[in-house]
Amino acid sequence: MTRDIAKLSRILQANPDTRSTPIIFLSAADDKSFVIEALQHGGVDYVTKPFNGAELLTRVDPHSKLDAIKSRIHTKPVSLKENATKAVKNFGQHLRSKGIRLAFHTPPGNLMVPGEERTLLCCLENLISNAIKFSPQGSHVIIGVQPDGPTGEFRIEDEGPGIQADEVGNLFQKFTRLSAKPTAGESSTGLGLHIVYELVCAMRGTVEYEKSQRGGACFKVRFPLAS
Image (cartoon, rainbow, N blue to C red; front, side, top):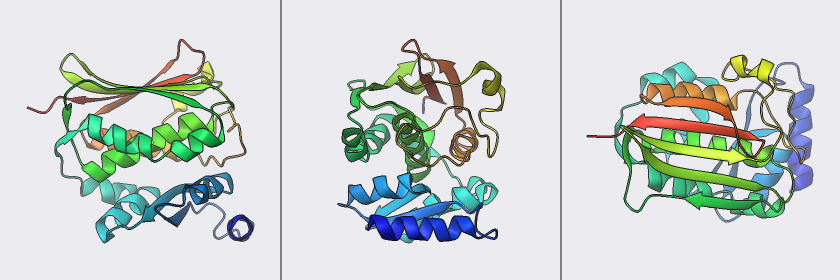
């Protein structure tokens, strides 16, 4: 399987017509090793089976038709806590493969915010994937979901290199390449944070970066609490 993934990635990256095309892999729901291999060999995202058509389009469209997907977003009250929990569960194998210890803190009750289930889940997964990707072996990732005044907050911190001060201003721009590199050879296209920023804003939320007290990156996603 690894050989097939690597071969496909090399073919696409060697062709000038497809070199900049984001690669999104489809895998069986119980084959998490496939996900790790796909990300390490150039994939920017993955979709697990079984899936429905709407879910597949929601996951694929952000990489190629961002404006179109933003125009189709219809928000309703959704649970920030439940979506964060779903997102965390999808990365157990990736965490174990790098020996990363995860601390996940949630409030006792649901935290309802305006959003769209699949789009919100995609954004949270992207941030978790980035934290793992840039974290060294044996480090910690801390995720918290909590109310913060009139908002609900998803917060993720890692112990990676963080973002250089002169790069913060362009952090959410399309195709921004940062000086920090993934720690296990994973791919980084510069699209992920731009997509997260645009989709969160389309759901009436905000995304902020700050230097973590642990030395790495800290991203905070906030949404107004649903009435």
